[in-house]
Image (cartoon, rainbow, N blue to C red; front, side, top):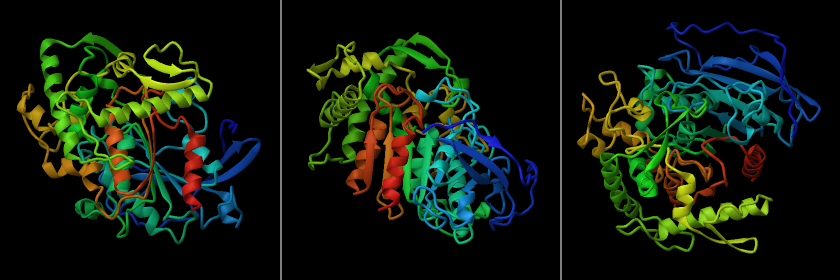
Length: 492
């Protein structure tokens, strides 16, 4: 597909919503209040009705973020079709804009900030993922959500906001185009984590008190499918997983704390682990096999996936298999991987990967603990804060080894509510999942998305999981493949 820069003409301009506005909002969708935008795709013009900055709860805690943008092809108001979809059958592509667990405003039809991955380097005044979704015939939606730097945006605010936005769409399903039973959530990094959490916790009672306080619509928040890019998730076990993977890698290039957002330019500071950090890494690495083994994961042949006390075993071999498939796919698509001596080939067939060689190539981006910092300096510590403590621990190891002036632990229930792994036995879990974690992504361990994917498969969910070769921490880099998947599951 070839996309040109969006041109926009306004038919009805919406007023700016004041952050300080405290009135009660109604939840009825007004189809007559919109502005007109145009997306140019392959020489064709798609006219879009843009409904922007709609408050999606009756009693918002922060109306700067608790708003939603909804983009609907004009053809759906004229009984026309796009790509085989019509007003009744069009999937709803639900794109969150969350990065670094920061507050997020809704995405628009124009790319916001530097594009990631293979799209990097392009002019930022280009069509966004939502514009691509419109071209597919989807109703394109993006909710804003509160985040960690907002006093009232600590966990579980972001997931509660996304659920409330889903409820708004379902509440208005009969009066707006798009099939609210076919909501496909999409997000990257912390947004990928939120997308996964949204798909894992549909209609779960743990979130109802928070939704009721906001005045969310009294309906379902279960979604149809999840697209999750490089999810920074399972945070209460992510430190162990990171050190299991990178324990032997002591050199690092660490991202500046002010840059904890996948959407901004990343400035890396080099260093070497000191003796204390190496001890912490050893402690966490040694704890990971016990956690992994308690999960009772099994492969497609029904064999148990385990690790021994040294961190080796069938689970590690499975991750190697995913990397071998990734390298093979890259070669099959014309990439020259001959410079990677740790990839063993027989002709053009990849037969093995030296895992230690791969890790040297990958490198380390974080010092231990990667997420629950002992000095409470991480963005995740801030995410688990509350009104009394801006930053808190969320693992027992960090609490026991605290180096900060304060020593506070997040509420156990809040920690539970932020991890999708805790909800995969429930009836509200989405049936369809697409999880992508780049093989050059060093922001969390490969074990984290792999564990999520395998547990979902073990629960008989339909999972499309891969580690794309050479891809760093990024998302929306394979939209043709993503939308092919959305079309496939939406037409079953």
